Length: 386
Ligand SMILES: C[S@@+](CC[C@H](N)C(=O)[O-])C[C@H]1O[C@@H](n2cnc3c(N)ncnc32)[C@H](O)[C@@H]1O
Image (cartoon, rainbow, N blue to C red):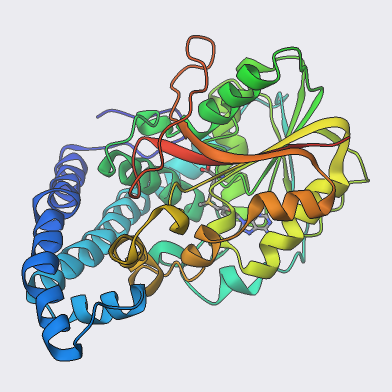
């Protein structure tokens, strides 16, 4: 049975066929059934709305409420939500069946590890992570039910990699590291002489996006923080087993324990849309505090931006906010990151869409036109410390 990488669960025949089923359903959700929703909106939902109200829907909320009455949208919504639940069920069962052996492999890493793991007993995870199960992953990122628990990490690693494949992205397959390659390419393309000595990855989860920086900036000391201890235990073992040196620290990206000006490059990947509006502002402020003079930050987000979408596009992409435990998605999609960076005093603030990069040594970062939603690019926000 294949092992995706040394720390991961083995994927057996039945797991594979379950994941293939998930991917097939997901293909329908983003393919023909999704197109059916758009057609139904144009041909049925919108004309009905016009005849009832004598006008077009005034915003995405009205579009959403109108769509929710239509049976194609109901089927689409059910397929999308149930397939999401199946993904976590399949990943969870694959991990639970072999939890002891995964835990043993992770405990059995080199006695002289390259990197390190620092957990902060008593760190209180933010409410936006404890009051919901983000993207409907049962238990979310911080639940622990046994000593040295790393289940959340093993499940997230497997489930999130399969999820990204379901979006058809060039995103590193089971390593799911495309975000790290893309941000590194952006730095290498736009700041060619920049050699950061200290790099921080905020909200690193299991380190999927963190590890590419080890290869692109081999002389740098790489630190990665998250609030979830079960993620970090797994992340540390995963990095060691993949031969990468990272110092994983349990810390809060809103108010961390590092001294001022501790890092030359600060990055994050799909962190903001899973935090509250207050948290986004705090993390931006913390980025400013932690960045050394001459330093650069790049935060990478989902490519959903409401300024480029019509009311239908916002309703379509906003589905996750109302049905997939992503309550901050649209708030993040309308945040004025450039204004925020400017107000904080960053130099050259920039935000835009960058095509997904697979290997930053071979590919440059190239801008992508504003997409209609998830696609083949990420939304990057960057700035420099004067
Ligand atoms: C969607 S995951 C992104 C994982 C990773 N960056 C990647 O690209 O694969 C978001 C992560 O942010 C973490 N997180 C959320 N709020 C945080 C905070 N205030 N401080 C540190 N980590 C946080 C969550 O625990 C979760 O692991």
